[in-house]
Length: 82
Length: 349
Image (cartoon, rainbow over all chains, first blue to last red; front, side):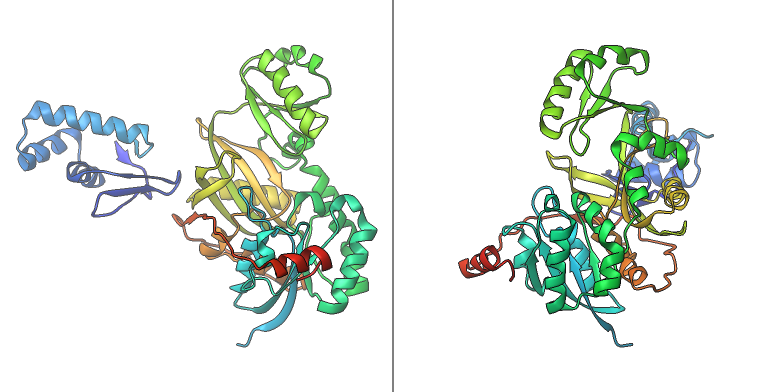
């Protein structure tokens, strides 16, 4: 699970994919997940970080993370090479 | 370093919802670091907006429509050149290129006007009707296509095509047909407008990406900038676009320009399929109307074309800025009737 190369992400949550020309914006939680993906963190580690930071339980964090990863895949921002 | 003064004549001054490349080409030349360019605008109609852009166009002349033939054009250019001493001419319309290609040598030898155009063979080889063969010859994928001359041929297409397929006019227009009935309908609609043959092309699903490029005629691609349309008008024209970081697309574009030994500016229109394959849909034999994006990205293609037209060596561009956008806008120019009168009656302004 890796972010595609060359994806540009600003501190404001603006995401630009230079190979497709698509741009998106995300909220602070999404930005945090992307930051953790960039650090090559696995799912379990990301869930742990999210529960610690945003006072949510494990199952909510897991569901939200899965939803967000699906969105990233659909927008060709993420590939699934573990 | 002081800039060299030159005079460049440019066509394609219309800037409507299907804009010509003339004004963007002029903007590129006005930003040249090498040349101090005086622009002579050549127009076909009195309402071409570029005629009245006096900060870009220094002097304008009407020229005869391409259908008037080569000798009318030659005679008019002779008159214009006697007054303006043109160094380089850049035609920007597909429909006029045939005449300018035929005149290229004579304009250079008789009037000293240089140009940098594809050869007749190159010009003919990328026509829609023979694009599939162009793809095979130049190692680039083109959706399978064939020409048909009668609606009765549509029934038999099932053997070679799967629906949906694209029904295209020889010069313009294209519609996606999901059924043979729709294909027949589009055949009649498009052939009534643009004549025969009609080109039937296999539909490829994916995203459209375009490249503005420049070849030196010896197999070198001098520059190439890829762009994806972000906002498209109902005529399918880009109203906004963004430069892409796409090495594969650049490599394919280099290959097409290199293998075909393309001479001059061009636009390559591709579909990137959902599987990531690139299919060439069209090759336009001149700069696109969005060529100024290339300048914004660090590659001044019109300037490089002028250098090559003048016989100067040009080093190929190796980089460009990714993620740069162009956003087009329309602008109401206020024009005095006397100016409109002048270009309409005297043919010059």
